Amino acid sequence: MRKIIDLKYPDQIILFTIIVILVLVSYSGSILAKEMNPEEAIRWGVENNYDLNTIRNSLLELERNLEILDAAQSFQVDFSVTPIWYFGKNRENSVEVNDNAFSPSTEVSLSATKILSDHINLSTEIAWETDDLMQTDYRKITSEMNANIKLSKQVYPDSWTENEKQVYNIKNSLRMKLEELEWEEMEKQIEFVQGYLNVIRLQEQVILARERVTLARDTLTRIGKQIELGEGGYQQETEAQIALEEAENQLVNQEQGLSLAKKQWFLNLNLPEDTIVYFGDGTDFIQNLFSLMESLKINEIDRLAIIADAQKKHYRIKNSEVELEALVKELEWMEDEGKPKVNLSGGYQYPGDWFAMVDFSVNLADGGAQKLKEQQKKANIQQKEVSIAYLKEQLRLEGEQLIDQDLYNRLYLDTQLLILKKEQHKAEILEKQYQQEAISETQWKNELLALKEKEMNMKKAEDQWFVDRLKLAHFIGYLREEI
Image 1 (cartoon, helix red, strand yellow):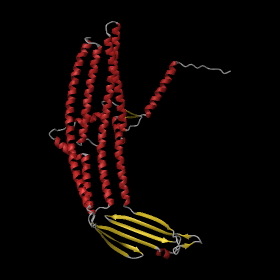
Image 2 (image 1 turned 135 degrees about the vertical axis):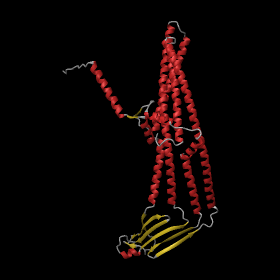
Image 3 (image 1 turned 90 degrees about the vertical axis):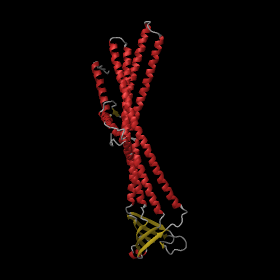
Image 4 (image 1 turned 180 degrees about the vertical axis):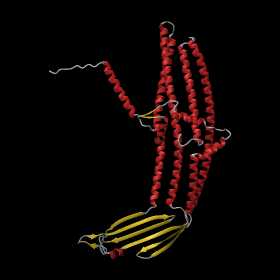
């Protein structure tokens, strides 16, 4: 018979064991989770944002295309082997293997080309057709072989090669993509900062909404007790119940908005799922940015000069000017296509001798196609010039709007500060009345909530001024590559 031993441990030991396990689990979780401050998170977002990576992938593709074109200028060597079977009654060129089988004739060729410099091409080819690939008779091999080496150059017109045109276009595309990437990286950083501040304000709204729910619940409880004592009416209870439900609904709405804003911010920065970011005022990163924006002085007198300078620095203007330059260059190439062409070439032909050739060609009639192409390209150039002028006007208006918005935001912020100051003065008066029991606790708590709401409105106004000033600073080129 088995003996059962009943071990009993004190409750303190069991409780201590549970606490240790919970601490270890939470500690291991904090180790696995990646903590980031706002600056680190934003730097991560710049490096991993989906939209920015799309531009970077385009840059990589352009760089690969440039490498492909560069490789095309090196020696290009081709080798081919072509077996040839002859059919029919004529078997003079065939070598009999047995009564019913004939070996094929085989053509072997080796060719190489190289672009040496501007419109100078080197090409060589060796061709050999034989009935016996295994033969070792040198004389017979050389008698069956043809070879040549040729050097050619386009003398007129002195235009660009197709390879040079493609390199030029790709380099222009690289320049424009780099300008776009630099601009968009700054735009995204401002967007990240704006989203970060939005989450902070939503957190504050959730806290305020919870306090309103608590106050509404306390009010409903107090009215219920008054009804029990015959000091209140059911109308008051109904109003209190409605106020509580509205406060709870508002809390649910605020919590959902906060959750969505956080998820959207994490998605925008493409942060890992286990990342922990602290959301709160007073971080050095935000404070330094705020100080930087306060140091930015916008002189109303020089606003036109500021906007004109910003237009020159804007990536869309730079890229449009690059496109205009490319269109002018394409017109030159197109005009060269309509000119007579003179090619000079020379080399050696084996078996044979040295040779030299002058190739002259001209298009005598094309139905006016060349002229129409040139007219279309000139029209494209004129349209691009009009587009640049229109873009400059758009950017001028955008700059004026940003400066006007900055002025309005400053005035609105000053107004909110005055409102807050007035509410603070009112709160001081009500606090004394509450201490003297001249007003109820509910009235005093309502005043505290009203004061917090005014503080939140002031912070929102300050955030708006801060974010819009970041956009203005970016527009006029005040910000560096990273903020």
